[in-house]
Image (cartoon, rainbow, N blue to C red; front, top):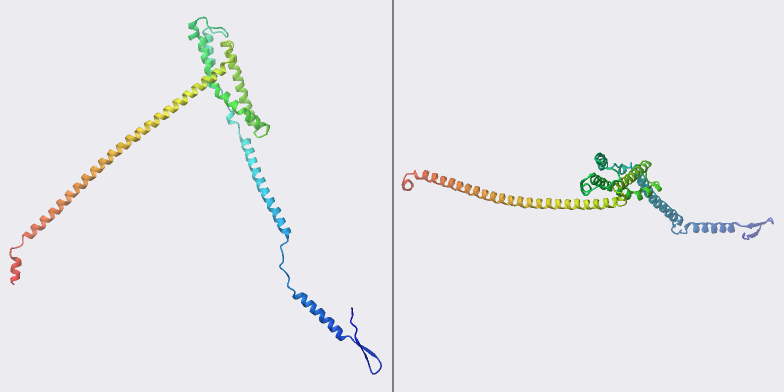
Length: 296
């Protein structure tokens, strides 16, 4: 809104409006208002909350990436471990008792043994070919027990690994070959058992397992006994060595004491000899030498 100026009547009859003061006042007010606006202090500038949100999201992404990388690395290591396995623990060979059995069987057949034929008398049953061949087959069966238990122990794990694609093709094929070999051996032993004595195939593996456990326990007991004997012998040797060391130490102490005594005796003899030599030298002075000197 503009201010109204005063009207001035000039001598010639013209009229003049005086707006200078009003304009000057308006300018002054505007200048003061601008100066006041410029001098008005501003409050402290705050942090944008969006920054905290971005930082939080970034931290969560970094944590997720770290955990994901760690888990992926573990999975890769596990996969590489199972993939690199070449199936060495399934490179199995039948025990030497298998070949030994067939050698014994050939000899028994040469001596008149026939499959399924029982011994004719008690003597033949005790020491004849029938008895010898039965012992050879049991020895073979006992030697096969570690292979059978090994395959039985690994079977569930290998099938699980294969179903989850966590084993190499080579390892799986090696395991299958070992399993087939052991299964064929089990059936062959049963067939041989029925040839020696009909029906023996039903119990031969159970008997072999019992004998195997008995032998294993016996070997463990013998090993413990040997270890105990070795420990006892070591203790005896330690005691004996300690006694010898004690005797040697005492002997050394005695020798050291004797050497010290001899050294003292020698030292006393040297001191005595020195005193005697010094006394003999002083004894050669003339009597009254000091007295005559005083008189002068």
